[in-house]
Image 1 (cartoon, rainbow, N blue to C red):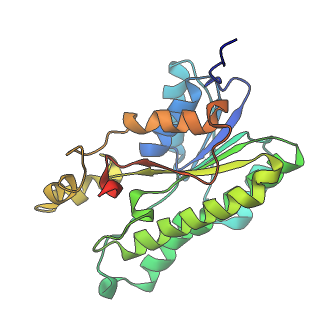
Image 2: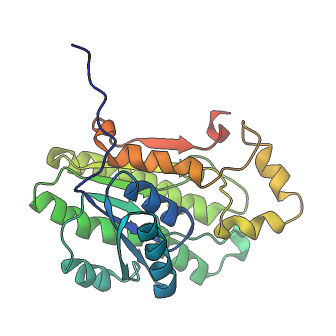
Length: 253
C-alpha cells in the first residue's frame, strides 16, 4: 500500500490570528479559512476587523473578530478567557521603526519590543495554556522575518525583536513538544504591504533590497499563504522548532 499524503484540510479547527485586519495577518486568516478553519481575527481597529471578516464571509469562510490590544497582558487574558480553545495561533502583530541606533528613542525600543516580542509571549502563554489543558495538539505560527536570521543597517531594533522571536520559538518547541503542541516561524523577505510601502519611497532602497534577493524581486502576500496552511495542518505534524524561510534566497548567500 502506498503511503498517504497527510491532509492540508483544517475543518473543525479554530484559529486565532493577531494583527489580522490587513496585510500579512489578513492573508494568513484567508489562507486558513480556505481549507476550512474557523478564524478569529484580533487587532485594535474594529473597522478594519469588521471589513476583513465581511470579506472572508463573502468568500465562504467562517470568521469572527475581537478588538484586542495584544500589548496589554491583562486584556489578553480577560478577552481570551471567554473564547473556546484554539487549535492554531498565528502571532502576526508587529511593527518596524527603521532608524540608526543613535537615533532610536526609548519609546521606539519599548514600542517595537512590546508589540513584536512581549505581545507574542502574552498571547502564546494564554492560548497554549488552554491548548495543553484540553489536550489539543495545536500549532503556533510566529511571524518572524529574514531579519531574525541576519543583520541589516538601520534595523538593529527590528532585527533584535525578530531574533528574540526565533529564540522564543525554538525554546517553546521543546517546552510544548511533550503536549503535542508545535511551534514554528515563517520568515518573509520584504513583502509589498502597507507596512513596507513608505520604505520603498526612499531613493535607491528598492534596488538595494532586490539585489539581495536571489529571485531579484519583492515578495507578494499570496506567496506566504501556503506556508500558513502547511504549518497549521497535519501535513507538518513532524515540524517544530523550525523557521520556514520565505525570503527569495536572501539568507542563502
